[in-house]
Image 1 (tube, rainbow, N blue to C red):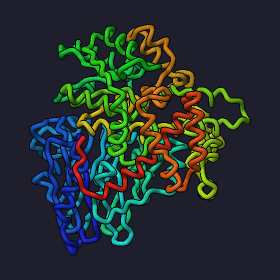
Image 2 (image 1 turned 90 degrees about the vertical axis):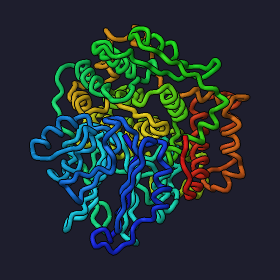
Image 3 (image 1 turned 120 degrees about the horizontal axis):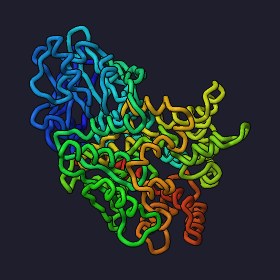
Length: 606
């Protein structure tokens, strides 16, 4: 697991360009070194650079990046992630005559590329973002690839003026490259209010994109990246849901560094915890450690009791981390800085604090339950859409359920000019509705259409990018069994009834989890936002400052008087929906301030 970065210009093929400035590459590396504190290496030549900040997980004493093999001169590679089938690939490549100096998973990448060219990523099973630089005469090119679910991101910038392409694991690092301009997208506020974060291949910045899940980008000298989606990694899962998940949990629980589990108190993380604890007992490994985050004081919606019951049932060493609410304002600034773009889910603060505790307790790998709701129909909005009668606007209702502020509220808050701009250009919500309606018109059932949208666009942008950035902010590798190809394939093959309301997962958990956890209503892992924006509460002053009339008037996108009335209404009658809208506005406002400071190359210490 690492942070990677690099650049590729027209002169890479001819040797005409100057070598990249070492000081600039050092600034790029410093921006994401929190995710790779163990080793730092960068190589550069005429028109190109390739660098890595390493978090040593597999074969900690080997695997120096960029990867190079003596018998394959001219092929360089860097990897962020884990290749769970690396032993199998190494055996096959060794039989083809390749030799490797260590057992690190990424060491085999130059050989795999030499055998398969840009199609190398079709053979990888894991979570990964890979960059391969081919400098051999006559075939100079850069190849970038990410895993099928988008667990590990690559952010891109292509300059059409000079033909150069730059990439990095994190946006703040990418912005440290000279020539990458900071220009917030005009529709970024509407996108945050409508979908809570940037979707598809977009980010909140003009000219900065993210490689889509399951995509490979081919970059030739002086040309824009040519992006294509690969077919899914081929796998044939065996057994029922519990068997398939057990197999993946056991694979992912194996590491050369200490492994723990995140236990929210819900079904998804509970299943992962139970199966990981079972694996530890059967292999005579030390007991599994589990982590749960709560807040000091009495707050509504606490899941601590459920998490403790899972820990007791599975016999783990349980850590209940209590965060002081007075720290939340500081956590907000740090999470916005690490994410590099606005994410309006307050879960970001909890995620950051939780992985901090994981690292402080000596763990480098954490198993999580992310991805289950998207694959197994766990969201209330999915059940509501399935129950909506034919002829109703289920897609519009579904899109509104994704929002931080419903369409009518957004349009009420916008200035006339901004409302007209969004109406003219279209909203992210419009594009979501159109995709869902088009899928249904083409004959897809609603559940399949929603699952495809959730896993292809929302899961990677909204959840996985956040988990990646905020776990790596503390040099923790988050592994997600539900996002593994065998589980994805298995889930998609289930009958609709089994993947609605997570029925298959409830059946899988019957013998593994406490009855109270199986009976409880669904609840997201987050902080009690409405209560924490009530009078006298910790975050209210911070949000009030970010939404001051002077700041909002200067921005020109929302009416300060209507935002002030929304705040007054919430203070009089605290509401989760109003609190969420205010939070999204504040996060976007803070992001516009933070992003402007990212042009100064500074280290990004956690």
